[in-house]
Length: 403
Image 1 (tube, rainbow, N blue to C red):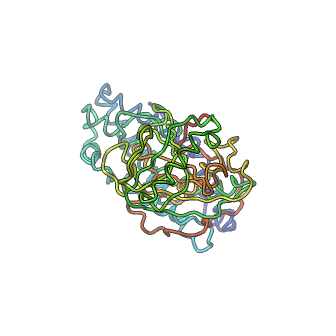
Image 2: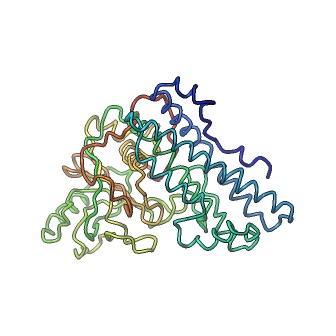
């Protein structure tokens, strides 16, 4: 496939240091953030094109194999490595200005590791090592599948049989861009409301107990919801410590493209809480068990909002609704992992009960290795939230809720 590398949106630094010096720090950072927004709209499809191209490697001639090795290792991976070095140099120089979202440096570290073939994905290490050592290994079917992965789409969330090395590169590239432009997106999305509190929590094992209801119905006013509240109130000895009414949403650990959103009205209870007859439950544990689906992780981002309730729940211009998007985008800006799809769940929280409406949000995270982040605090003022022009937020993790 000719000129595959041209499908990517590459960062082009100022032509020379004199031009760079004529820009203010704000202008320099705006330039980088502008590139990130453009790349987010272009690179996902370019990575999918690389995957599709590599999956055809079995049919390549010996001459094509040699040429295509050059394209991948030099024109794509090599160019990404050079771009990452340049970004790091420019961002390092801008860091003292206070403009830079410092989470971006961890994303650059991760991308550089993957570009060097030092993948963190244990199941891919052997295949990646073989291809980097001898590109002809790509002809082996299993090695090729593990290296190329599958087509995950422009949002990066489409379900694939094999999540391969190129998919990991695609995610790492997205992480760099999210860290650069998401702080601005989060600020811009808060119109008519604001996020007053944001923190990460890791709770002991617990059990969510509730009833399944169609969210299109006016559930909080229905008799069965009132009965649910009375039933859970009576289970005084099984409180979890997070005792608010909540609407849990999940996909059984599968992609949103293959599994509808399941809705459960209820509360988080103690892990050993008995399940009343006719009720459903979902279990949560503090640490990853290596399997998709339940039990989910009792790790989550917690966000509280104040302002116009209609604005908080607005859907126009959002992937799901305002609270969902602002919570998710804050997580992405901080380079914290969302365990999609295997342990992905979210919840609307009703601090004063279902009748008063929701004004807080929970979003599943997996914070292994993220201990450097502050555990609790007010809504984060992420570095680099100055007005830097309009950038389009691309979809990260979607919910499929029909309201």
